[in-house]
Picture: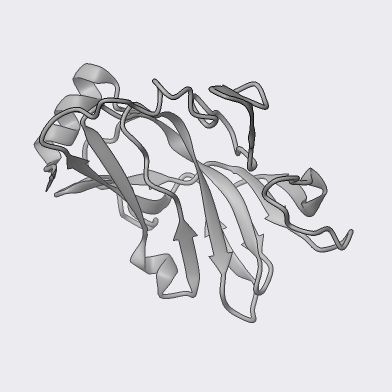
Length: 195
């Protein structure tokens, strides 16, 4: 498995729609950078935020998740409470080739402020807007900015396509748009909520 360079990412995005919208070069003046880099792509944070709150003393249960645990906000920035987190999404829509696995790492600018970006790998055949979780590990409120860089995606190409892709398995997060909360499959091969 090898990491793929800028020219491959560009070609896949322009010819096959792997990343839409696609930004050819790093944009960085006065903002947190985003766009094509040497061996990756820095995606932007959208302006949709779901901020975790403990107002209703809800229990966080991935098998029975309550939307009451979040307050929804839309805007150019988001303030994450101390020792809390926000769910958000990328501006970009990704379409992952059948022989590629994508790993995401948070931007160092935010990491140096105590903000940690968490994303599970983007599996072969998956597509959608990526739901991100940003944790504020500090005892202070922390700010993130919409339409600026949030995380870098690294593309690893396998020696051959896998036998069964995420799409073949009818993965429960296939084709997601917007911020997507945890889901459980209720029937073999089907998701419990519409995409």
